[in-house]
Amino acid sequence: MAPSSKQGNNHWVKLRKQVFRLTTFRGILSIIIFTVIWEICSWCEVPIIGNVPPPSAVLVALGKQLVSLAYWASWWNSFLRITIGFLIAQVLGIPLGLLMGVHRPTRELIYPVFEIMRPIPPLAWVPVAVIFWPTSELSIMFVTFLGAFFTVVLNIVGGATSIDTRYIRAAHSLGSSRGDIFWKIMLPATLPSIVVGMTVGMGITWAVVVAAEMISSLSGLGFLTWRAYVAGEYPLIVVGMMSIGIAGYVSSAMIRFIGGRMTPWLRTY
Image (cartoon, rainbow, N blue to C red; front, side, top):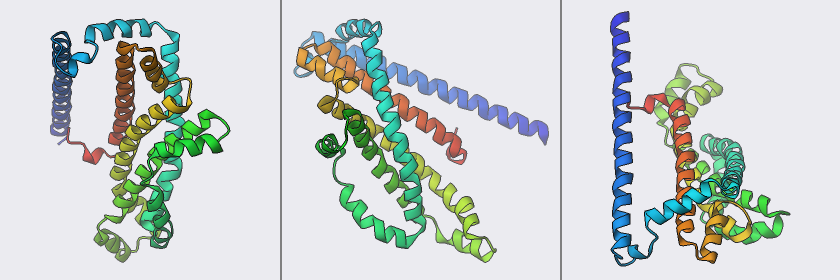
C-alpha cells in the first residue's frame, strides 16, 4: 500500500507541475499577443486605440521609472495603505460576519443598518473621511477599510447561512457542543466564503485607494497616475495603470495562495 500511495502522490505532483507550466505559458502568450496587437493598432492609428501610447513608448517611460526612487516610494505608500486598511477590515469583518452568520438575533439587529450603509460607494465617504480624520493618510486608510469590510462581512454571512442544517442537527444528536459545531462544522464550511470575500475585497481596496490618492494625497500610485495626466505625460499614465494592475494582481494572488492552503479540499490540481 505504501509504494502505491507514494506513486499516486508523485503522479499528482507531476500533474500539478504540468498544469502550472501550461497555465503560465498561456498567460505569457496572451500578454505577448495583446502587446503586439496594441503596438500595431497604435502605429496604424486605429480609432480610439490609436490615441493610446504604443507599448514601445510605455516601455521607455517604465525604464525611467524603474530607476526612480519616487516610483518605488509610490508603490510602498499604496501598499502600506492597502495593507493597513485591509487587515483592519479582516480583523473586524471576519468575527462580525461569523457572529451574524451563526447568531440570528445579532444578524436581525445589525443587518438592517449594515444593508443601509453597504450600498454607499467607498469613494462617497472620501469627503466625510477628510473632514473627520485628522490626516489624509488616516482618511485614505479608512476609505480602504470600508472597501474591504462590507464585502468580507457579506460573503461570510452568506456562507454561514447557507450551511446545510442537517450537518448541525446530526452533530447535535451525537452530543456535540456548540463550540465543537462552530469549530468543526461552521468555520470550515465558511472558509471558502471568507477567502472569496478577501479576494474580492482586495480588488475593491485597490480601486478605492487609487481614487482616494487622486483626490486627497500627494503620494502613491494613484497620485502618480493623476500627476502624469495633469502634466500630459501619457506613457507615464499607462505605466501608472499597469503598476496598479500588477499590484492588484500580486495582492489577490497572495490571498488566493493563502486561501488554497486554508481550504486544500477545494483544490483540483
